[in-house]
Amino acid sequence: MRESKGRAVVVGGSIAGVSAVHSLLSAGWEVVVLEKTTAPPTGSPTGAGLGLDPLSQSIIKSWLPHQQSDLLLNTHTLPLTIDQNQATDAEKKISRVLARDESFNFRAAYWSDLHNLLYNALPPDIFYWGHVYQSFSVSDDKNTVKVQSKVVQTGNVVEFEGDLLVAADGCLSSIRQAFLPDLKLRYSGYCAWRGVLDLSSDEKSDIFAGLQNVYQDLGKCLYFDLGSGTHSVFYELLNKKINWIWYVNQPEPQLKGNSVTMKVSNDMIKKMQEEAEKTWVPELVRVIKETKEPFLNVIYDCDPLQQIVWDRVVLIGDAAHPTTPHGVRSTNMSILDAAVLGQCLMKSGVEKLGVCLEEYQSIRMPLTSKQVLHSRKMGRMKQGLVLADGKVFDPKTATPQEYKDLQQKYMPGFSDLPYRV
Image (cartoon, rainbow, N blue to C red; front, side):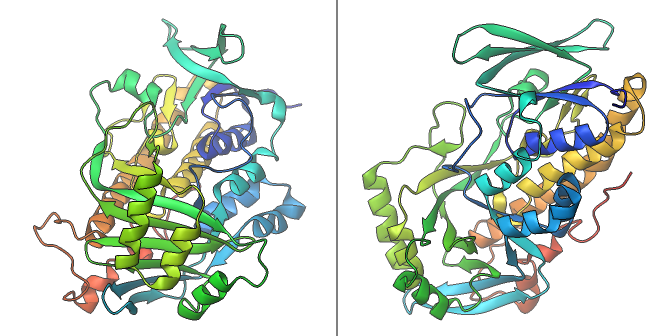
């Protein structure tokens, strides 16, 4: 056994958290994880689908058993080799292609499938499920950090001590709030209906056949469908599951609790389905209507932070850079945050921890800031909202050059991300 370089307490056991664990263990650190849910997730009620970029794929493979890494990742994901933006005529119910990239080398995953893949490759005894984060304190000499959590089953408050606190507690991060109490998330102007239609039990599904007839690259294409002041996203996941998202402009809803997912009523779902019939082609409408328990995400982001490191505390993932989903960045940024943090910490022990954390911040902040703002622009374009230059993107009048701005490959750092440090 090699000597540990330090001990980290990770708050949050989602994909950002488990990614941090992989990277920290690889760097020679001890890790404990505090997660409020009482057991590892087996489903994905609010996570649905995600896309992994080539760098995230290679990083994940480095964390898995080497002889099986390719097989493990490929059996949990489907290739997305095409990024296509198209416009749908609501009256004629026909679509035309605006921009198409056939060199898109992503892979699609169901949230819980990816989480399980990463989690199952880790020692289970480092996870403390059912531990709700309460508070933290840094020692007077700035050398250690203590984290208090409340045990769901008993109500007891317990304490964990480490050299480093990694905040992987999401876009509504309580740990971030301790440093930035006045920070407010920015409402995007729209919400997203989301769902996954599972057709795996119907081998001769006419829904699936209908989709394939209209969307002929289903199974390898990330489709963005632009309507009038709205857009939808859909793609296939493993086992004939169709992941779909539909963004709707509306006033900011009032949320309850610490979540950006709203509870929806049957009346809300019915109205959404009626609007879908007016907006999208019948094949997509049927997917939306057949989906059980669709849910509604309120879409927020945040102006780029000026700091993501304080003494022995570091932010990663959505805690460090809340972003809108349009750049397919959230999961990818979380994975890369974790990987770069591990690379920085690998260089030395806790005696130079401050230098390592500053290096992590200097590498990640400039790029994630650009990506958050670019994703914001993409969302406003596709929703027909006013852009920074005062213009509104309209697929009916836009030029071919403007169509290019819809594509994922123009995201800052899309093909040239700093990783090795």
